[in-house]
Length: 323
Image (cartoon, rainbow, N blue to C red):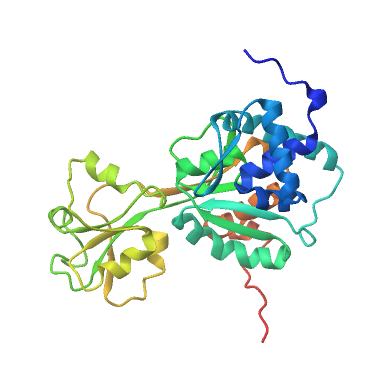
């Protein structure tokens, strides 16, 4: 068993370097984020390795990856630094119009399609100096990235929510089927169960979209033929055009294609649960004033659109564009 680390030898800047390496995966980028040169950052990593008796970060083709020991240390170090920042900055008022903070959001394509058209006009009016980075993450990846502090907020369909994460429902959306309007199996604007079974399908591959249709189809004993896999939902309508393919979409994504004259959207002939989108964030950010402001804005805009439009202080106004 190794001896306890002497806290008198722990420079706070070393912990900031550790946090930055976790977030950026690059010595150069991490150093730039905390104001250290590349040699200074390398020296800090060397001191950390000696102090904690572990490599902590190993280089591979995609950058500096945390070792199991670093992953074990990460949640407590990140949370400790967050608490320290909150204590030091607790009297500093968050002013959206002046904030130049940058937030990293992990989103499925469905969540991005539902949230960004509402959020960005409001953000450009209310916090024009604030920047967002949106990354494409599957639900399981997003929870891990939240735990490591690499993203600030995750918007996706989550089945399991770790205890250290906070959550809130964004929206639920019914599912729809999309086929070419000239599909011979389309009868009176509807698809029979037999047609659903026999037609070749377009499948949204992977877990990034948040769609769980395969599980539901298999649960009732249907084995469908997947003639095409696509990486995201937005590819489905175009793939169906001019073919006998059938696709399954959330109705939010489908609404963007309602004006395509050769597409037909029909209810699924099997029970299919609506797709849901949750917002997840780490407990360490629960009382961060800027983080709270951003997520409350997202929640308010969703509520304004779908449930209680009269309650929003930020009506769905367009960003004032001028020529």
